[in-house]
Length: 64
Image 1 (cartoon, rainbow, N blue to C red):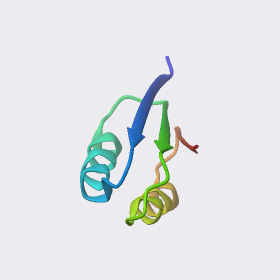
Image 2 (tube, rainbow, N blue to C red):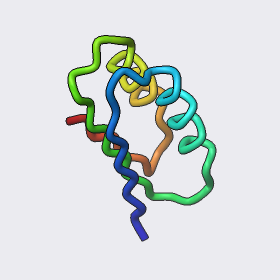
Image 3 (cartoon, rainbow, N blue to C red):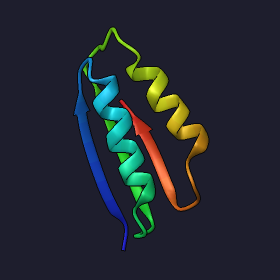
């Protein structure tokens, strides 16, 4: 069963990094992670890009 996780964010790169690490460490798969970024001006985009690069199989990343 696919689990979808929707994360709305705005200028919360530090917290987002911790959250994405926690999602990565979960054992349930497949997972879809949807990050909704409301025009952040911090490192949010970088954090999501790094997570997407290092993501494991059966995890899909969607950024809007």
